[in-house]
Image 1 (cartoon, one colour):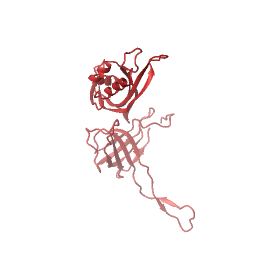
Image 2 (cartoon, chains in turn brown, green):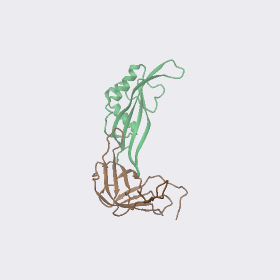
Image 3 (cartoon, chains in turn green, cyan):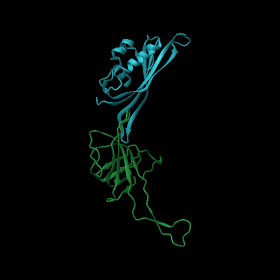
Image 4 (cartoon, helix red, strand yellow):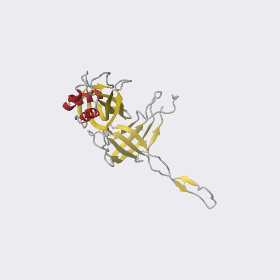
Length: 143
Length: 144
């Protein structure tokens, strides 16, 4: 497995694709995942002192991605609640990689913000896509 | 490229050409140039990017220095250029010397007119007045 001497890369050339719903090729400026966390179940007993003793909950909120893209008035805008099918975020392919890392799962549109109109600034839309857990989100590392 | 396009638009104004004819010079006023005159230069040219690369849309800032032997003349040139119709202009402008055009998406006044003075030549007691303003231009590369 090739390994670069450079430990990290920028987000340039990252992509997002949808199996259904959004058919336009979005000119995406940023892909920002939410922080993911799992809740705690308190299993402290009478003998416990100091820190609570906890175990993780069985379920947790799936990740929600916030996308910013350059708004194209020729495209149909995303629709709230629209199913997107298998949604794949692909990391940039680094020069010494064969396949890039990906993260994929089924998703839907959870929020849409149409662009702010301001002098000398491009129109930028904001889209939130929520993984719905039907096809669980899975990360595949690069090779 | 944008500087050349703005120059074309400004010199189309009868008021501007009555004051400076075609004496709107790129970058710097030539030594010994007749006054009133003006020069123009790019001080910023930011491109709009997305993760897959650029979209050939840019934000360009251009500075204009307007020169006159008298304070009122330098100001007159600056305000004539501002009022030439270039602000708020949208449309295709040819690039001189090529068959290509740039699509100007919007022109706004960035910094309004300020004035200073300078010696005509080093060591000379003769001064000229310089009225300065800047424009923000949003533009995109046309397809041809």
